[in-house]
Length: 385
Image 1 (tube, rainbow, N blue to C red):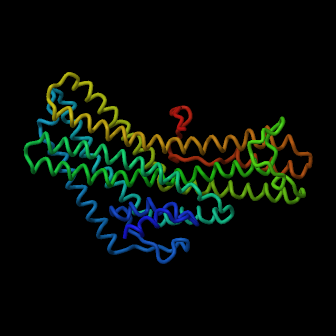
Image 2: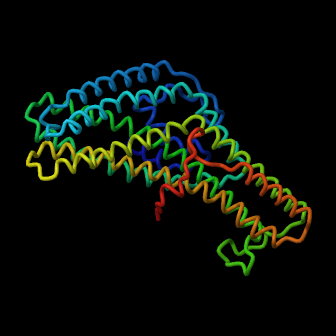
Image 3: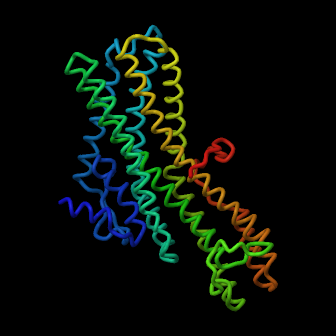
């Protein structure tokens, strides 16, 4: 059994489904998915699974149980002399259960769109097979996030058992936190995985263009492969390369539009609610400054740690959203407008590049809500090494 699990993680990816399988397996285990693929996922055939539908229903019933648990948090854990804190924590935690339940139902209704999204990515990958080599990146980030998440949960649960004398109350709170966080971590990890998959393809498109065309006005810096086979060729061959890149850019636009239609508003809504909850927990900690009540402080610190963790996860998502915008801008401004077109002499090739640059200017890929225009670089000046 252990060897099979190890082989499953270490298997080399051959298509996008081999990268998405980690998030998809999480979703299937906790009951978020109500569909399953028929045969090889590459075929794109999926259907509703009766067993998973039952699991899906049980998931929502248990979320309602957790909502009741949060609504009946012992008074002494939130009694710090502030009615805002006392009722605010209960309201946010209870409403969070209903919100997560609604998000999962919304995604379940669009299960066909999710499978179509992955199929579009796979069709794009058939043109450039090196695009799915970011498996280690997703696994590393996912495992580190999972380790931090487990550490926070263990700290909270140990503190709950130690500080709450009523065994029934303490263990039901432990169950509530474990179950809710398992579900929500799965939802957020799917957001992260999809954003990562899209951003890596935009980066790869930019790098492929730099390999095939001289994008530097001055002396070539030698950053890219020291080979002339990519930059050589007849004019017609190079024009076909530009047209192929333009077609792939168009497909990336279609993929990001599709993803935004399924998850765009959910992305923004979740991120704003998590940041609001984190800000409220900061306010709670300020109200608790100097409090001598250990259970109350423990509960407040653990809530703050949990909300900060999910804020960090959404910052990773924002990082990839910014990467998409930055790379698309780089393609337009530096690759064509300031670089490649200035270094070419054939009029027909230059016209092909101008058509491509006009295509990028008129419609560029972005990750976000269709209804809310978010300027990621302006709001979040965050850099990750």
